[in-house]
Amino acid sequence: MPWKCRSAMECRQLLVKAVESGTSVAQAAKEAGVSRQVAHEWLKRHREGGDEALNDLSRAPHAVPGKTPDELIERCLQLRRQNPTWGPKKVRAWLAASEPDVEWPSASTVGEWLDRAGLVERRKWRVRFPGSTTPLSHAEKANDVWSIDFRGQFRLGNGAYCYPLTVTDNATRFLLLCTALTTTSAREAREPLRKLFQARGLPAAIRSDNGSPFATHGVCGLSALSALWRALGIRHERIAPGHPEQNGRHERMHLTLKQETTRPAAHDQSSQQQRFDRFQEYFNHRRPHEAIGQVTPGSLYQNSTRRWDGEELSIEYDTTDDVKHVAANGSVKWRGTTVHIGDALVGFPIGFKEISDNVWQVHFTDLVLGILEPGETRLSKPQPG
Image 1 (cartoon, helix red, strand yellow):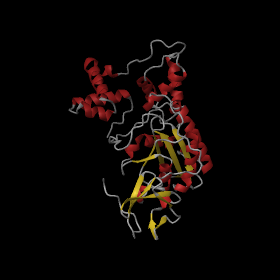
Image 2 (cartoon, helix red, strand yellow):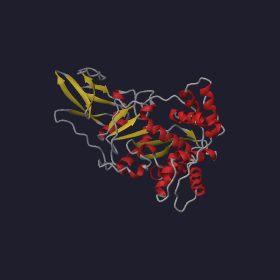
Image 3 (cartoon, helix red, strand yellow):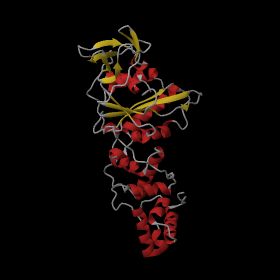
Image 4 (tube, one colour):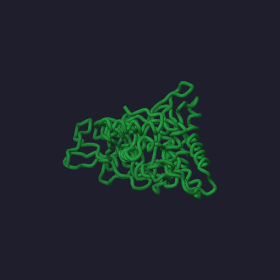
């Protein structure tokens, strides 16, 4: 268990005593919540000057035009109180950007000011596992990869449940969509996504988990939403089951969203959406983001050049393909037989390509759905190679 220190001085003294009684520096540093480098610095100060040397060192800036140290401290504390989820790095970055003529102290000094004012919440130690991007693609620029997910339902003040649907751009961390829905159904999610595509353009890929409404256990894992994305030329990336860290930057945004907008929740859906709208503006254009150099996502993001006007999609197949539209019951009529395809492709055209005598390959755009032979009512998996 990490130590619960009432002050930085007490934490330094506990670390020295722990090391003197046989605890390793690495373990003592972990319990104190500091790096090993900081722990070694404390031990060096104690060896050279005893307990007195563990007192806080002055880190006041040498020259602050037009400002006194007390005024600087108050500006930092005021900004932190206005933004309770901000750490010292974010506080300093925002102040440095808004008042560049002031020589602001280091983030560590700001952190000490916040700590002394009781504005630092001690975090519990958690085991963290490294994320994996394989076979997921790396987002190098805006609109390479968008991440999509539901934050998780919560109850509003009037007792109804709210399901926030969110979309972010992986490269710039720009929050593209944050909308309050009443269900997690594809039917309800489709309209806000359609408006998003029209407003922002189309990404190269969308990353999601394997849950509904993004994926199913049907043919090729397609859902009604992912089928639409494929028809639009958007690649669908799915993280490994049970590995949310593969979408870690989106999950981290959800934590901030929860802290800023749902504690407590609004009374009804409309009021909650107003909170989401304010949060989206704040997250994109006001809040500095450490992962992108303490600038705002809005300063980096640009709309996609791949546009969609929202009109009916036109999917083209080879002239040699036999094209059928999937009926409302998820099937097609093929040479006198009803063949089950799946609900995800209802309304979409699929192609039948003969690959050998009376053996047909069934595909949707360039995705092979399966193989069909005479008399069969279901597709069989294509053979590798």
